[in-house]
Image (cartoon, rainbow, N blue to C red; front, top):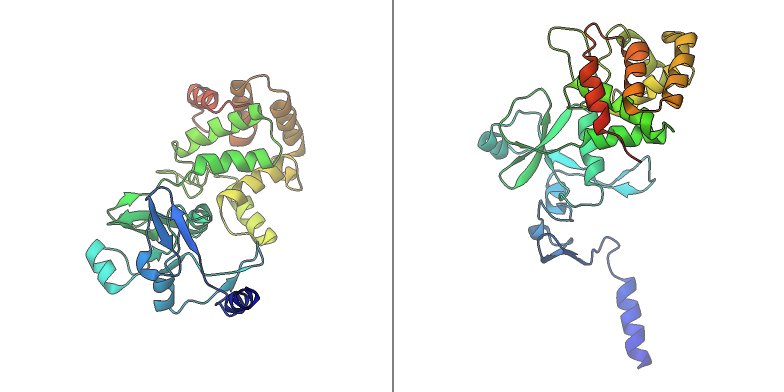
Amino acid sequence: MMWLIKILMAWELTMPINFKKVTFNDRIGVGVNLQDPNNFLPEGFDYDYKRAEQAGMIRELDSETKEMHFGSVAPTTKAEREKYGLPDESYVILKGRQHESWDKAVKGEAERGFRIKQYGDRYYSVPAEINTEGKEVDIDFKTQTQNLLKAKGYTPTAIAGIMGNIDVETGGTFNFQEKQRGGKGYGVFQFDFLNPYYQKYLEKSEKKDSLEAQIDFMHETVYGDEQDIIGRGNAKKLRKGLEEAKTAEEAAETFMNIFEKPGVPHLDRRLEAASKYVSD
């Protein structure tokens, strides 16, 4: 028996380090062998290793996890661009929809100005401003916004009030690249007079424009080092108003009056929207 154990141990040590065991895809209902490129399922858990290899991709260091990973996208082929009418700058998503870091891929593409859409049975990333036909994938900016505000320590009531304002400002999209039609407003807060200050903040902090960066900027003007932008007196009033608000509607009105200062308030819409985001 010992000789068999030694053989099995030796075999395991000689296995390739990138060997992937069979994983079961509950949604599809079939086994998925991650080492078999022909088994890639866009709706599954796996990664398209064959496509990554064809694109000449190599593992790169993830700055957050400090681990080596392949990227989330690869350039589209000429055949794909012609078939679906994709722009030259478009990419195929290499991760299955249920991959453990699918949400991270969606967020990364959104931060660089791309949206993920489905053509045929595959997912592709195209520039947000390109009006290509395809089934757009739901990018849950609402949940991301709520989570970012929660991480800053805002109370549920304050979060609901801020969310109500963002809902109205973006027309319900919560897209950090939302642009005002016929105006200068930009982003989830529709920065207008604040936009030059926001751009300076990005440059100073060496951050890229993103949902997270816009939330960070707002928070810094209320609690942090950028209070002079809205005035320290206003920042203090806003802090007090958000922290002591008894209802989401009260928080929404306070945030509108002090931070947003819209030309056309649409207060009724903000109050109604805020009530939808009340949580424990």
